[in-house]
Image 1: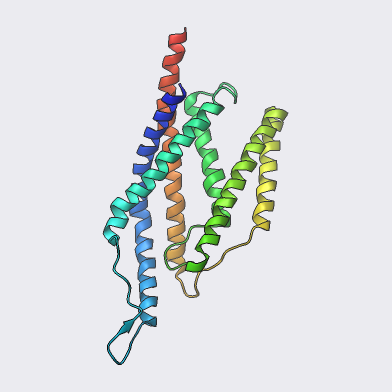
Image 2 (image 1 turned 120 degrees about the horizontal axis):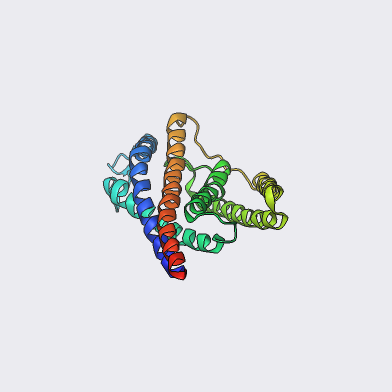
Amino acid sequence: MMRTLLVRGLLAGLAAGVLAAVFAFFAGEPPVDAAIGIEEAGTAAHSHVEPGGHSHGEEEAELVSRDVQSTLGLLVGVGAYAVAGGGLFSLAFAFSYGRLGSLRPRVLSALLAVATFIVVVAVPFLKYPANPPAVGQGETIGDRTALYFGFVALSLVFAVGAAVLGRKVGGWNGGLAGAGAYVVLVSVAATLLPSIDEVPDGFPGSTLWTFRIASLGTQLVLWVALGLIFGALAERVLTRQAQLVR
């Protein structure tokens, strides 16, 4: 059964990835193009030509064209992330099924998808929101990446601990205790972790926030679609198994 659910999770992730990539293409690529234009304009402004005719500041030839990046590259990147997420999601579903009351597979899958979006995406986004090209310094990308994924890991650990606490307390009070503990712990972590603000002066706020909203929207489409599609597939499998057992 675990293998069956895992396969369903991978398939649901693939379908959700396609939907998310389509959304990202229409909602996210325009602000990316605008940010790239701003970055190129800034590079051109700092370039100069020497008396001998040699120029500085010219961009190197792209290994992958922008058209490929915004279409096939986007689909492959989002799809790979979604398939991996679908596999992990199916394992989390298998572990949770039957341990959180008598929830139907569709309901459990939807609730698990919402919880994953909040814990893995929305909460880290509040501390370290996504930035388009031309925002952020190249020499700090390693530190920024480590801080972001570190906060994601902390958010996951806190969420699991809160779920354990809520189950031990039980009932409505357990849910409140778990949620309260998670909010307190993640708030303390967000306060202690260093902030990152590398948005250059004069960068258009509309471009910045359009990109960030599109990035968050892409994740929302992915996890909502994954939760709904996997829930339907899992319920069909588990219902068939229950009928065989009878």
